[in-house]
Amino acid sequence: MVALLSALWFGILTSISPCPLATNIAAISFLSKKINHPRYVIISGIAYTLGRVSTYMTIGILIITSLVGIPVIANFLQQNMHKILGPLLILVGLFLIGIIKLHFAGFSLSHEKQNQLADSGLKGAFMLGVIFALSFCPISAGLFFGSLIPLALNSNFSIVYPVVFGVGTGLPVMISALAITSGVGAASYWFKKLSDIEKYTRKATGVIFILVGGYFVWNYYVAALLK
Image (cartoon, rainbow, N blue to C red; front, side, top):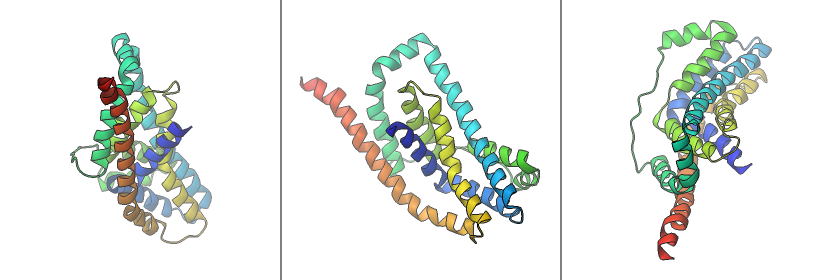
């Protein structure tokens, strides 16, 4: 349960990070155009979230099945995953708090194409979710590939984790869609305010990663040497 909640938190943290935040604000702007049709706003928000979920699920399935489908790799991961996890968590933690810097070129979409998709109905909302999910930034890539995938590989229900992660990335947009239909003004403005919270939650998550990673390193490396 804790692992699944962690996957959900990774998704939420991804959605309010600066780069994905911009794409989600664009999605909210798209939803706001249909404010006179509350039901359509909700359905479009669901379609957008499903687009993100399907993308992360597909990528997750491809990676996980590729790794566990090769006997040599599967055996290696089964025997050494707990040893790999410690250093990996520390690296991701250092990245989240800003000590390690990475540049990651993700897939992008022009503003004109975004508008074309936004005007093409529910199919367009779904495709926006797919395309924005593919627009990996350093933080989203670090959380997905560096944290979620190792977490999934360590579970018997590995495919569920990318799905939960995708729900987390779309959750703020769904909340904004509900706010729009409820008559709460300037939903995108308040969504932008989350960027102020993001830097603190991201650093707090990074510190937790480092502490947990340090525990794994101590337990499986240092303590083993001291025996």
